[in-house]
Image 1 (cartoon, rainbow, N blue to C red):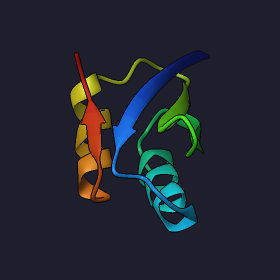
Image 2 (spheres, rainbow, N blue to C red):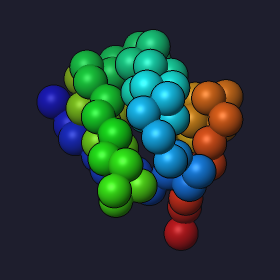
Image 3 (tube, rainbow, N blue to C red):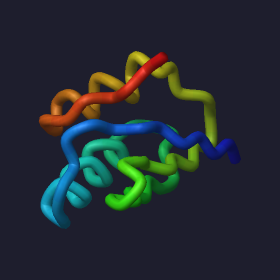
Length: 69
């Protein structure tokens, strides 16, 4: 299992939390996705590596923005 933490822009409430978690949990290989609204982060546990582009696309589809550096 591999755990990665991503910063997500635009999440402000429990609806946002649920939308991002659900979008990520639907990806193949994702075991869990947990949003921390206070930090604006999502922790993703994966059984296989998932490209950041795939993570970003799922977050974008949910209506939010993955912050990359």
